[in-house]
Picture (spheres, protein in one colour):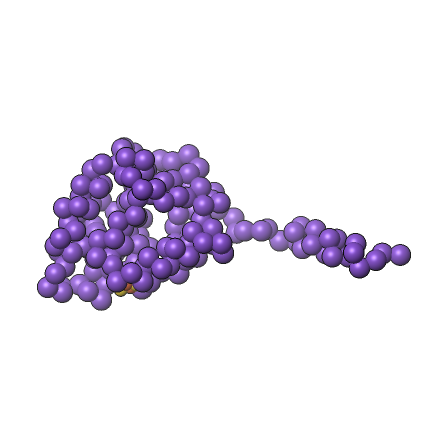
Length: 165
Ligand code: SF4
């Protein structure tokens, strides 16, 4: 006779085998930004003028639910230790030079990820008096993550596209 103390572990093991724990990794195109990195990517985050909505979603991206770290993506403190920059917000006049300097400090090969509508095209702040432009006006963007703000799952998927995991 199978007792309840055995049923729970058996059900757990069955559930593990029933479906993949995560979705399959996105396909990596040859010559794309993702093909420059071997399974992990370290990113220096730059807030170029965000409302902080995108930062909350990035925090969730690296939190316990999405846990982008398990796919090889990490945020690092120094651009010297990074493979690229993860930029949020449209670029304000005060942040145009710091963004460019941070990008230049990242060793090659390097990648630029524009996270959120503001970073991609200025979003709701496009044309505002303190705005110098979108991220692509100052550094070459490799990956765009649309949304205001983008969902943590969308950010995770984009980062998995870079790591290939
Ligand atoms: S895309 Fe939306 S959430 Fe992100 S910085 Fe712009 S306004 Fe804020």
